[in-house]
Image 1: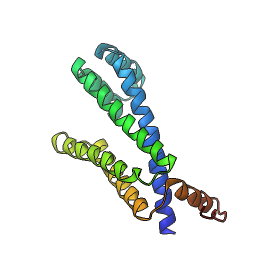
Image 2: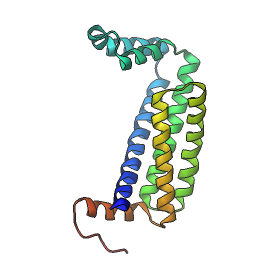
Image 3: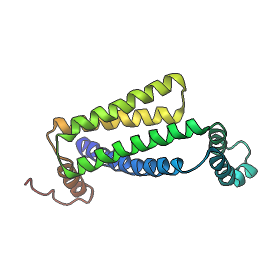
Length: 174
């Protein structure tokens, strides 16, 4: 049972990484074609109603604060970071879905590099969001290592886990 739950967490983590990668690429592209003033205007529009109801709303205030402190170089850095991070995540997810076990070590190295950057961010500018993301990435790296050591491809884990979730007999190995 524990093994199946870990398999499910791994698959959901890979799915989340793929969706997160898509959002990061879209956000990076959007940032490439906008100005800091336009971002601040959009942040003010998006948060205006919430801040009128609750001037101390944490998320709305963080959005406005972040947009207020962006400058052209900052936007370019964030856009480049989001694009790089998103493309790498999407490449990892696609490669895992294609089914080559050789991708697992590369995925762990790439995620480990981002993890090191996040640890640096935690030391220099601590935040709950980065801390949660760092723990999540560490768990995904560990689960990826577990899959690699078990000598399984993602599609094998997928088939067995889907069968387990829906209580069907697991398909036989090909």
